[in-house]
Amino acid sequence: MANTTLEDKDDEEVTFNNLKYLQVSYQELLSNSLTLSLGYKELKIKFLKLSKEFKSLEKENKEQTNDLSKVNTLEVNELQKEVIDLRQSLYKFVNGVENLNKFLKYSKSPHDKSSLGFVKEKEIRTNQIFVAQIIESLDVDPMTAESVQKDRPNLQGLTQKDLRKFVYLK
Image 1: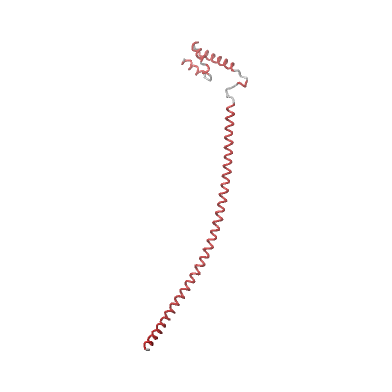
Image 2 (image 1 turned 135 degrees about the horizontal axis):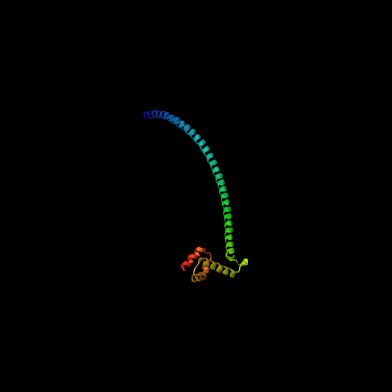
C-alpha cells in the first residue's frame, strides 16, 4: 500500500501540474481564438467588399463590351454604306467611259467636213492652187515645182519656210 500512496501523490501532483498547464494552454487557445476570430471577421468584411467590387466590375465590363459592339456595328454599317456608294460611283464612271467610247467610235473625225456641205474635190483644187501660189512666190524652177506638186498630200499644214526647206532638199 505504500506504493499506492506514492503513486496517488504523484498522480495528484501530475494532475495539479497538468491542470495548471491545461489552464495556461486554455488561456492561450482562448486568446488565439479571439485573435483568429477578429482576423476572420476582418477578412470576411474584406471578402464581401471585394465580392461586391468584382460584381460591379463584371457588370461594367458587360456594359462596355455591349457599347463597344454597338459602336463597332455602327461603324461597320457606315463603312458598308460608303462601300456601296463608292461601287455605285465606280459603276457610273465605268458606264460613262463605255458610253464615251461608243460615242467616239461612231462619231466623225474633227477633220471630216462632209456634213457641212463640203465637197472633197474643191479641197483638192484649192490645195493645188495654194501650193502653186506658194511655189510661184518662192521663185523655184519648174522641175522642182512639179516634184512639190506630186508630194502635195504630204505638204498639208506646212508653212512657207517649211516649203522652202522641202524644195531645197529635193
